[in-house]
Image (tube, rainbow, N blue to C red; front, top):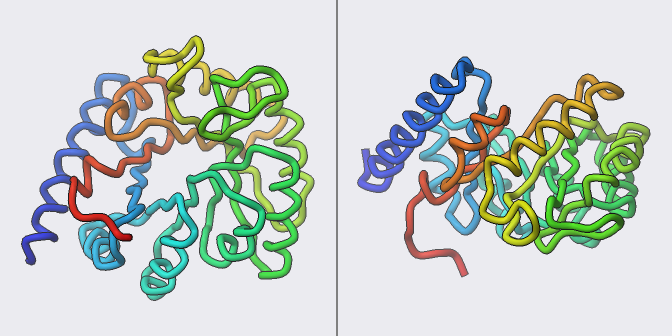
Length: 239
């Protein structure tokens, strides 16, 4: 095992212990929570090492990094998640490799994703990104639709050809009433998810929590946590 792979294995083991402990504390089964490793800015060689170590879900937030990396790892049966703010001019590229787009936050993006998915003859999973720092009708500082816009956007995804409504995502906000209150933010996300599933029972995915707050996300009921630094560590980034 290379030094880098050994480092990743040790980091993964620590993250696994954190998730397992958080599940136990919340009275949840470990298999209720899926780890997504956010590999943004790290090379394809790390993705391959992570695959060898058992990781099956990876995430990216910039198409210019993700597209070549996904191509280099196309032989691996990975589930690729796109988690960054997505411009419509990048949709066609992202749709070529992503299995799930977690950052759907406006109707125009839904239309673009649908057209690209149909053209590529693919079904693309979509999460509505909620901005808990956004006022009604606005988008958040880090993307996302205000909570009162979720129902309309979810209906648009559900009705769009080539798209599948999988659930909701949020990033703990840096401003607003939930700033510094990660557990409260994630509790709010789960509340919104419960309401969404009344009309869309298959939209059961709740993506929340990162390296610093995954325990709060698991305690609140997240089904997926997105962990980057705690697994990959600090090392030279791609240009």
